Image (cartoon, rainbow, N blue to C red; front, side, top):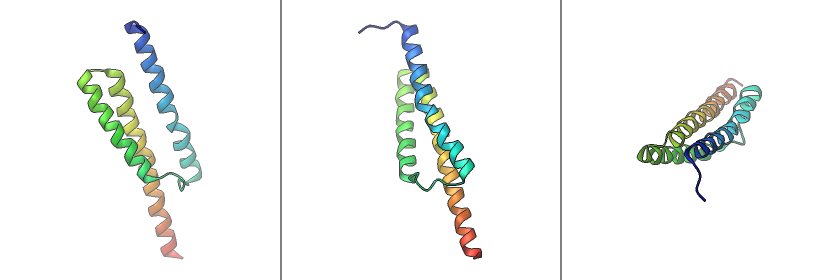
Amino acid sequence: MELDETTMGVIGILAGILILSGWVPQIVRGYKTKRLNDVSPYLMILIFAGAVLWLIYGIALDDVYIMGVNLAAMVLTMIVLSMKLKLIKMLQNMQRLH
């Protein structure tokens, strides 16, 4: 199937929006509830590593859509991971006080 450059661009943008928008509810929920118990740090690390490899691939192809989506995925992944680590540290400090 042959698609023109504009159609491919729209598909790339929509794919990026869909993938990245999945992170937003997790970040908002974690911020509101201060709970990220069910989020595996290993999942975050693996997703980040995959995004790094996709970024390298995007750079090799000079594809701004692949690069942009994966840079954003790396940022969002680090936000969730840092929130989780911060909450773990906060809980450990609270347990020490009791």
